[in-house]
Length: 481
Image (cartoon, rainbow, N blue to C red; front, side):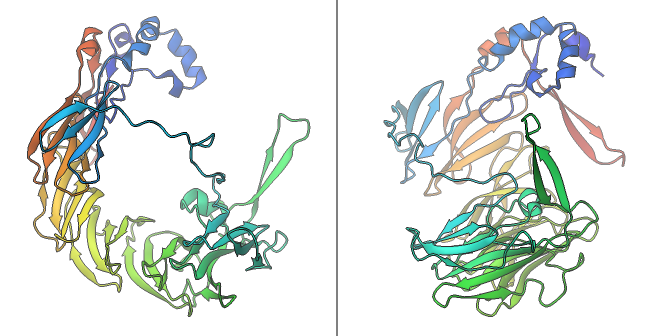
């Protein structure tokens, strides 16, 4: 084991890994508790650290660029060391390209107002065509014209006394399930789906606030701790023209229990054609998850995809992407023990296993439906930390890795799919940005990192090490900063 105390008298070990060259000093005081900071100040080498720390971030000129592609995919803009350039693919050259003048968007910078507190949902939603506005007020849901006229109450029985609320969610949904919305317009704006929560089974949790003020306040929240009952969730769909609502049978007639699939209902949306409302539902243990579609007029539901992992839990919200035809979608699953991609029809038919790896896939980079090609990232480098670009056919055939497994890669495709910018780096080798064609062949080197100041200051690079887990077989990786 390296003696970290004496190491402070030597140089600093800095990471060259990560977009933007985030250099990490061996000690980062902002992440250390105050009591620990007091101890650090008495350690040998602390004054040397204070002297050198401000120079760390300036000691490297990063070769990692952020490519902004032109719409035709024939050029891209990027910045290096404060200067902006444009690379032209036809000529294979870069030229200085001053950034466009910034528009004066006013004090808000073009951003909309409103927001949400932690664990809460947005309190209003505008219909896709901009005609209507749905909004939450005092535990009930309302709809009006976009200008605020013709207001009508969709629900009226929501109240604190009855512990019922509509158009918002219980705390657990925002905090644990990342549910930031609670009302959803259909694509044509004719229907509005919304939550109903019954919090009668849930004990209240009390937090005294404003404790530094003369008079304190009490924040009361229905909050289920482990082992106590959860709120009862339901979905409704309101037909704007008919002025009536339909209850969605999210549990298909079964009672609300810990074991029922439909104990949690979240990730709510609409099918691309607006014919069905969709959501994910799980049991309380969350080892069964179903992607479900329901008729907004009947409330009847069907299971599109079911995931089950009895020994532990399933992913709450797997990656999902509809294809342009609105009938097929790419689905991420851990059903074989690793994250892989599958192609489904919205009817529930499995069309293809797109990837079948014993390593994890990452994000989808690009889908070319005309050519039937998927580009995606995966942890297939010479260790699991090094992301790689892969190409596969949409029928599941022809999977190939397009990048060097010795490096971690970050890629940005051109809009036409003919080229991509590849940023390659490791824990101890700084980023290099390269232009490649769609087969992964190098076209041009765009930018490299300058470490001259880093080396001059005597900083040391991060060291990687491996060790075997307790099972005596599994190899684990670590890094010494």
